[in-house]
Figure: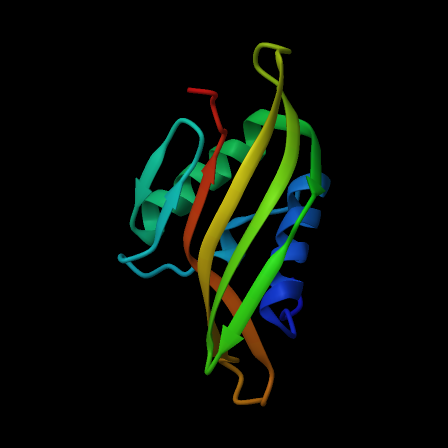
Length: 135
């Protein structure tokens, strides 16, 4: 996965990786302070997030990810994002199809390349995905 030049590019690259069934772990920091809240899960720590993402990639297919209102703000190596996303996928173990109109938000941090180049990359340190319900 080549480095994402901006936080917005990182979010869009993540959506593409979901659609394509590519590995998702590189998009997230491996720090123990990393968190990811999904529609039915709460994950704490980079290793827990990585394990869940690997399982998700292995057990889901035919992803649809349609961004409806992506907003990204970045300052001094930290970025926030929010989006309204229509998402759908198939559970490969059961054949069941899921679809949600969802809300996504989170925080990314910029990190410099490990190879000493000036390239930077953005990784999620927090992500929250929820599906609204009428009250």
